[in-house]
Image (cartoon, rainbow, N blue to C red):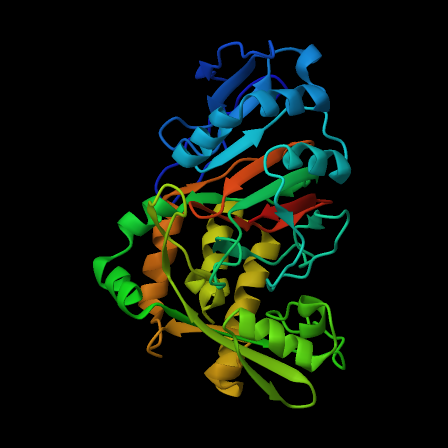
Length: 384
């Protein structure tokens, strides 16, 4: 897309597309600050995200965006409540520091404690690299840290360098997902909740050779003191199991469907489509259908083999990540496929542009990452 045009993405069920046409939908009225931004959507039939752009080159500065945010807090709140995600595009946001300065004006309650599984590097006080996982890895759709009892309320992404090819951050309205999840699956999750099991290597293991390996427990808890790990785990309602030389297993049961803390709307809010042993291999075939690359085919085949080996060599409770219904019943492969299909039927895909800032209501909208080639610098921050 050109700098001053809007992309219109036509998304058919199960077949995301990135074909674009220029189309402006609406414009904001001039605010008290005298700043007028264009408001549009990639696809009005799937209005996710809502896009704000400058109307002229004189409106591109970081300070202009900050001033607009300060005088339009109600607009932002209403848009997040209605749509679930906002994209600021075309502004001169050239560094993670700029990004952090902007989003502090959206929500000053940013946090930097991270109990998630993805390896990340901290670059400013509140800004991290989105993930250090290799470019060929798929990251399935999920709400940030939904395996916690109290996940972050907002999520912020910043594009420092757009990927050479692919590498989108797909987003999906979790409220729509919940409505389309088969009734028998929804009812089981509502009744039993969801149980997670996560296994982390300790400080003695510096390798991330396995496909599913992410970070070590000392990286996640920011300490090598097992007593401190146990204290934090108790606060998070994690059951702690030490095994092997210094490996850690965390088990917890929490909600699979959550009510929004402000709007009270219900949404699908769990990691079943991420932590299931078959999730990655099933997801990659869907990605391959879209990207149609030789690398994608080879990775998909490799995942099939690795998943098979993993299943026959590792007990389910000691898989790197695993999830079941709250009562311990396994989530079947058929049920996983049905869940993934609902996500893909509602997915919103758009190509990153340098300087983009994406604001997500973490209780309403999920995110992921598609494989990519070339350099890609995406940063993330979150707020409670």
